[in-house]
Length: 365
Image (cartoon, rainbow, N blue to C red; front, side, top):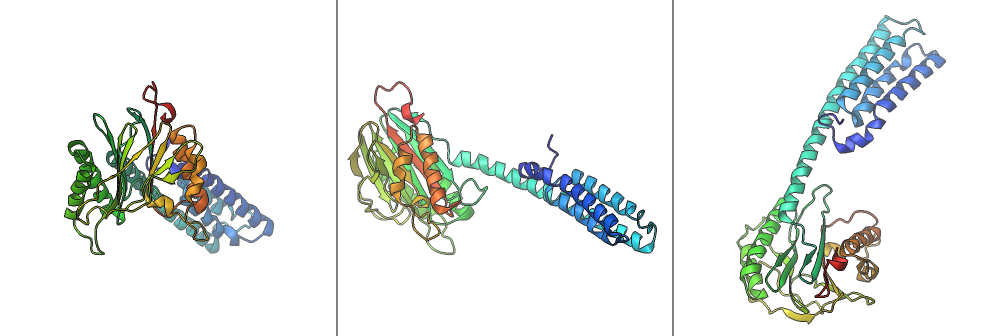
């Protein structure tokens, strides 16, 4: 059973704490006896509780501290210095460091517990803001991924949402200009407004106008203008309508072909900058076609040489047997290109047109 205040991360490292401390105590005693150092090495025993405190629980750190103190006392026997002023002072140093180690271990585990609780709150917040997309709506299969650049944050300024209607599916994916909590708040507001507007508005440009008004009402940060780049998509059977509000257009992948943008990217203004909206572009897609909607965390991912992620690498990932597997493969390709964790948030939304008479979720399962 895990002790209260002990995080999962410290749990999997705890084997390094007490065993390593006990091993250090044994090594110091053996060297002290072999070298006949007359208790000079006793001070090194103070390292044992510090070692335990760095990765282990307060309880196990206390065991290491007791062992180090006992070893420091017993180390005076071989050299016949037990009870001498030098020996007593060195034992006192070990005791003092042990007490400090207990404090460090307690403070560390409390901090890890706070981080764990905050991570849980963020996880719940993420589920409330970025709801899981349904695996299928009519003849459209869907899957989404979100990865925050801030480790453990779980959610940031990228956003996506899917709103089904009686005879259509409307989708948004976007990126808030900014970072931190203000970006999360604005992303949440845009998603909420889209959920409402996508249901009541007949035309896609009217939805964009509603979102324009919402973003324009948001408080302006000290560093400049607030805006949101986004793509709005409407799906009605074989027909697609796309609006790019300062955002890259979706990639279309037909089985056996290289993925290409739906059209040359001539984006309209980002959301929040006002003005009249350009009507959406009309396209059609065939059964088996997939559309990848993404944020700039994909195309702006750079390797060590500063080269951007090439979209040509998406051919094989987008050909995976299911949408979740395809998104997993895309994420692996990005991490491989970057050589680690990307430095920007990344949202991916993949949809596929299924046969009208398909009885299950097909490749979107």
